Amino acid sequence: KPKERIEVKYGPITPKHRTDEAMEAFRNYGLGQFIHWGLYAIPGNEWEGVSARGGAAASEWIRTWSGPNAPKNWKEIYDNLYKQFNPTAFSAKKWAKQAKDMGAKYMIFTTKHHDGYALWPTKYSSYNISNSPYKKDIVKEVVDSYNAEGIDVYLYFSILEWNNPDYLSKAPETEEEKKRYNRFLQYTKNQLLELLQNYPTIKGFWFDGTWDKSWVQAYEFTYNLEKELREKHPGLIIGSRFRNDEHGKRHFDSNGDILGDYEQGWERKLPQEYEWLDGNDWDAVMTIPPNGWGYMKDWSGIYTKTTDDILDMLMHTVSLNGNFVLNFGPDGKGLMHPGEDKIAKELGDWMKVNGEAVQGVRHADLPKTKMGYLTQKDSTLYLTVFNRPVNNLARLAFPKKSTALPISAKLLLNNKELTIKHADIGLDLDKNTYFDIVLPKDFQTDRAFVIKIKLGQPK
Ligand code: JFZ
Image (cartoon, rainbow, N blue to C red):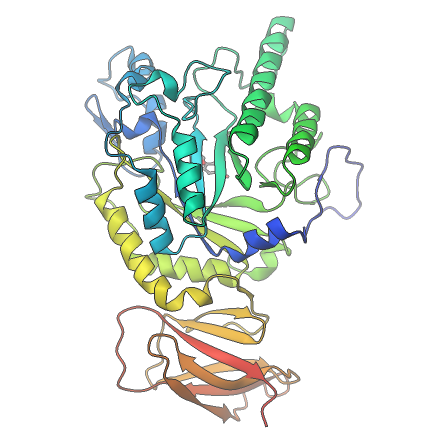
């Protein structure tokens, strides 16, 4: 953060810490689902003799990475894929049911990725779902089906468009360029207002493709647009990736203040320390394969995250007040990858037992533990154990002066009460005091488990 504050006219519109109901709901989600679906689902990362998995070659970017033997008209072929887009197995209801069973409380859906293809029948471009063999409004089906399962929906929207002749990546210079880019800005605004009007139950937007100079220099337009979107849709939640200030600062303005309602920069990586987050709300979006958000046919030969990896990242995230959003990339027919189905099922089985340690919880202001992660809901503390102590004593440190100390504990997986012993050990007795939760020697589990601890003033 800069020491002296400088003048920023196009800084944050909403307070750093919103306290309204919509934002509180956001804080309580814990687990979410991301879905990347669009024309790139048809090639599925294997196309016209090109196959690249992981690394920089994300499947949804296939239009930009033709191989050496690719046909000259590669991009044109891609832009015509919509003529084949006919997901006969697509059922938004099935997706929503799966997400619910997995324990997701919100979902983010790609209405339009960088290729510019709209999955809703937008009035502002003919490059949309109504001109595919499928024809029907996919965004509507998704919003309605997820809402019916009690899952909040956020719309992913890429500003950047690869094939829009009005789009420009550099700052517009000539009069002609200015005219063109202004048309593009108006088009973007029209589409966003259209989405709000068509799908009034959505809770927010998840913006992307906002890094080009053209968008960065349009700070006055984007500031006013954010205001208008918020006026039209009270409670709307927008992350920090939407716009920048007049000095070109993105995510955080020139004074270090967050732009938008939550930090949106934790993508396929996680913050290590609570302090790094400076009290901001945040989400972490995560792929199962290394990099690739759209459908990837072949998962062989690359590391795909396991359910245990995902649980570890989920608990890491929620213990630091974030939401963890797991990405799915359905295929061209509308089916999830079998690897995704497997993880969704395993995650769901775990969440059914342990979900209370994930949802509606906050960061616990206690010393960290090497056993795993701490989350808290009022006077209930959850310890999710990934590293089980060999002596079966789960030792936790509490600030000496704390009046909220462990008074009872149980295992969520079998509801068995556990004994708590005060451990008068001299590591840092001036600061902390220790408690051992005694784990039964004979219980076996092949995943992380949760100890639910009641806090209070011991007698
Ligand atoms: C973007 C997209 O390009 C990508 O296809 C996918 O949709 C993903 C969710 O978002 O990729 C990004 C954007 C920002 C960062 C990294 C990848 N970032 O800030 O680190």
